[in-house]
Length: 566
Image 1 (tube, rainbow, N blue to C red):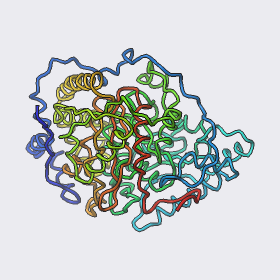
Image 2 (image 1 turned 180 degrees about the vertical axis):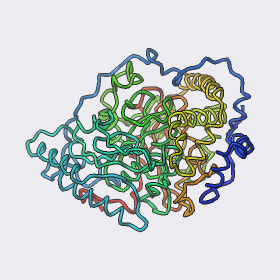
Image 3 (image 1 turned 90 degrees about the vertical axis):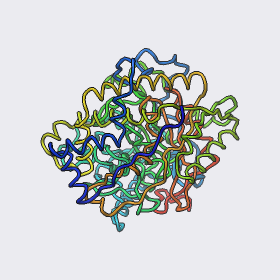
Image 4 (image 1 turned 45 degrees about the vertical axis):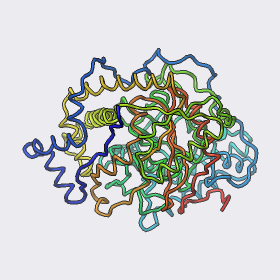
């Protein structure tokens, strides 16, 4: 087969035009005329004609319980030793190690917390505001910092995350905060139980700053939210952050915290990580508990960290990952192991095979391709070998993902749609189109998904250890003024941003975005690495090699909570 992924095209709409289009699609008469054209543009009608003999599976094939590889490592310790005192950050960000070293040398988490709260206020006072955080409670944050400060004074910190600020995407429950999922109507009552990952981070001593902005119900990739404000990129406030974990990506890039928690159904961790110049990890499906995350796209969903460095991502991952009886998908998986220690030991990549599908890899802006090639070169300089590969049926994979995610989101929000809740115009349009799909479209997509997973398993079993490709096809787009109040329907931009991330969600394989440079406008670029199921530690080790060779850029609007560096 030849490379078959052609750009998706449809007229752009925002403002009043988007309202009109959304109404027309929802109207029974005009919708019956418009929907087939829009579904054809998205590749859905072509999907219906693809034959398959595959069975139906409720989750990515090859990751079912009982099909995981045997464990080779023990579970990670709950707390790693506090690192020795460090000097100014070697990279552009203050990392967890620097916070822990500062606390060990006598600095207080209370000082850091006051600076973090002041930094949040500063981002809100900018013109326009960055709108990174949507909810925070200063008294609650200070109380957590005070408890951490007491533990450090007593010489009994809970581990390297004790006292470190962490932001949480407003898709996950945090006690005392409503979970709005980026809407104007959800989250009217505060959560009474933390999401599992939040509970684990809190138990490790993290100071939860509050809720970070997101694209409404995760159904978009720019972070332009008409209810809570467009989340703006700390590298250039006129540009988007990517989404849907827009606030977490921007929070790390702006220096508000070295770790933030996002969620990823189609690139929603890796996209903002790439566009904001930070690290983002989507672990294997089921590796990290989804308990306490808003139900949006059950078979594609992943919770994971966005981080200032690979080490921060590894630390967050080993704390967050592991079995949770409240999430059956997390049970029966291999132990996580000490990811942080493995990352620190990474370096010699001899024998590692990195797959590159050239036609796919180069289907991006030239600056993105060039920077990502430099990232691959860093891997080969460390001993890895590039293996030319081909991935067939990418257009089908894109359509399978689209049918799956919008069908599951429409099902998750069915009651709210029927109640005519006040979604943004872009979300209303997407949900209306989702409801034009047939039930057979979803079933057919899952059967085709099984075939795509079989092909991925064959590739990773016999040919490669990891796949390298850009994280996004372009750098952060400008935020159009006419989209601020309504959102935007721009299939061309969405497709360019989303193009490379879908493979790992359809298959459920782990994927990492690591910064590899900037374009001519100084906007960040991310290299994506996709690995075998449950080999997150290997991916993080590869990312550490890239990180050493190509330090990530520092955002123009970044803060220094510790006052280290320039």
